Length: 230
Ligand code: CTP
Ligand code: MG
Image (tube, rainbow, N blue to C red; front, side, top):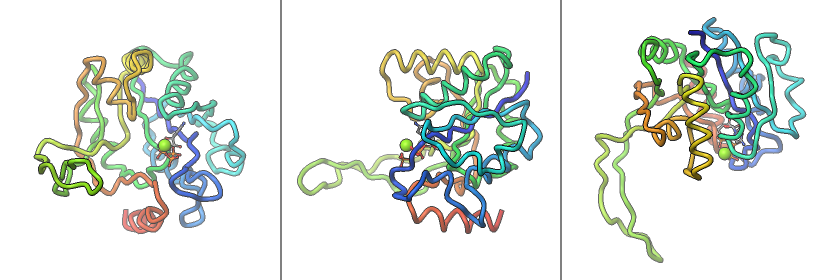
């Protein structure tokens, strides 16, 4: 089977409160989206890459990636899941049912090449797939709601993981799982949640906790620091 990459980049970055979408903010004078794409495409693993973009995107032509003929674009959708499905449909003519699709957030430029390699080698013979994830480090409190929230209990964190990306699944299983989850109205904040809902249990592959998703302004400095050390 071949490996395909989808990098959803159609969000508007509301929480970043910047003048334009966060994937087009620069770190070391490069678009975050370009850093993310080159860190993954440099692996030489992928047969192709699809990047869903916002209908109002006016920055893509300025990206380094736009002149890379291995990388194609399509239009994204309202939610992340809609963007991912649109990219899966756009790849339809090129992929086989049991090919692998890796979905990776444009906003995660700090992904490590060793984690990508480990994810792929761990799952390459698996029938479903899985995701990079990191064990939760903080002690977790469940709140008892009220005017002033109080602690209702401390949650056992020994079985809790933070879901990261890439998330890697067989093409047709993923398409079916996302379509079903959308039809049933279950929340789909990542590919894994849709796979879980369909009864195909994804494998957790431990990845570096510094594979952060740039979400709020403070994450920009943090990502710059992490990238400087990778
Ligand atoms: N994304 C997408 N299509 C959407 C929403 C999100 O392709 N309709 C992408 C984003 O561009 C990002 C990734 O999914 O690379 C993770 O989403 P998130 O961090 O939530 O980005 P935004 O939705 O842009 O940010 P916010 O939620 O703060 O608006
Ligand atoms: Mg979002």
